[in-house]
Structures are given as structure tokens and as C-alpha cells.
Picture 1: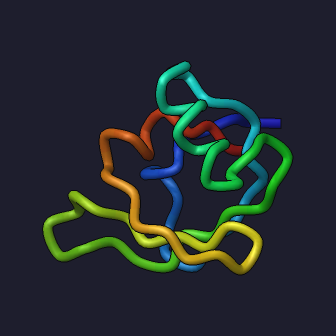
Picture 2: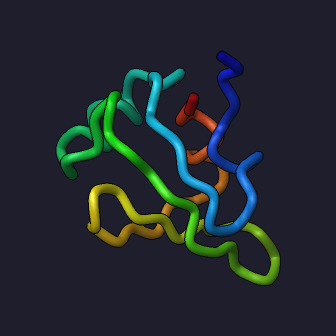
Length: 74
């Protein structure tokens, strides 16, 4: 199965979090309840693409593109 980063997803596409490539980001995401194995859906991107709005198990989050690129999905 192919693993890609969150910003590569299309709007309304969902996937399962495989892993984080940045340990500091992993701690931050897990403190918000975002863990590997959870389903994440890309709701929309801002007009400049700097922020991504996502749903993680029905929890809405806004994530910077730089941080989102450290979230790998399958």
C-alpha cells in the first residue's frame, strides 16, 4: 500500500494515519487525540494552501501545511 503525506490528498479524501515523520509534531498531535491508525479526512485547503482543515474521528482541526506534510497516510 502506498504511503503519502496529508497535503497530497484531494479535498474530501480520507485515509488512515500511518505515522509521523517529526517526533515533536507526533507529541503535539497525540496530545490532541490524533494517533496512528485513526481515520483523517481532508475537508478543505485555504485559498493559498497554507492551512488544511481536517476531521480526525469527527474532531475538526486546522493544521499548517508544514506540519501536515509530516503526517503520512495510507
